[in-house]
Image (cartoon, rainbow, N blue to C red; front, side):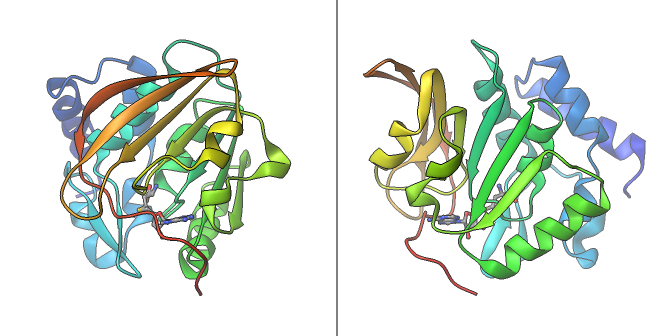
Length: 212
Ligand code: SAH
C-alpha cells in the first residue's frame, strides 16, 4: 500500500493533471506521505486526495501541494520560504527538499508537535516550526523569498505581503470559508504587488489566534 509502485502511480496522476516540474514530481515520489497521516489511513496516503489529520484539519491533496510548490519555485531562486499552516508537516517536508530553509507556523499546538516528530524522524533539518498565529507571519525571520498559505484567509493579511522580499512570491487560496477559493500568486516588485489567478481550490479557513 505504501510501496514505490503506489507512489509512482500517484506521480503519474499528477503528471496527467498538468504538473510539469520534474524536481517537484521526484520529491513527491520520494516523500513518505503515509508517515504524515494516522496509521489507520496509511493505505490511502498515495491517493490524490486530502485526508483528515485530527483537530478538524486535513493534509492537502497531493495535486494541490505539487501545484503550490511549482508556483513557489517558478521565476526565481527561493532560499527562504515561509509556510502558514504546518498541519501534518507534509507540505513543509516537500518544500524543504527544494529550498534552503523552510519556516512554518501552525496555530494548533497538537499538530505542530506531531509535525515536529515526523520531520525529526525523517531527519529533515532545514525546517523551523513555530506555534503561533500565522496571520502575523514570522517577522523575526523576514524577509522571505516565498510565502505559502495552506489555509484560506478572506483577504491576504498585509503583514504577510510586507514580509516578502522584492521579487518574492506569495501563493495562497483566497476567499470565503467553505466552498471554493481562488488560488492566487502575488509577486512583489518593490512596492507594487502583481496578482495572478491560478485555479479554483478548496482549503480550510485561516483562523485567528492559537489553540492547544
Ligand atoms: N500544509 C498542511 C495543510 C494543513 S491544513 C499539510 O501539508 O498538512 C491548514 C492548516 O492551517 C491547519 O492545520 C490549520 O490549523 C492551520 N491554520 C489555520 N489558520 C492558521 C493561522 N492563522 N496560523 C497558523 N496556522 C493556521
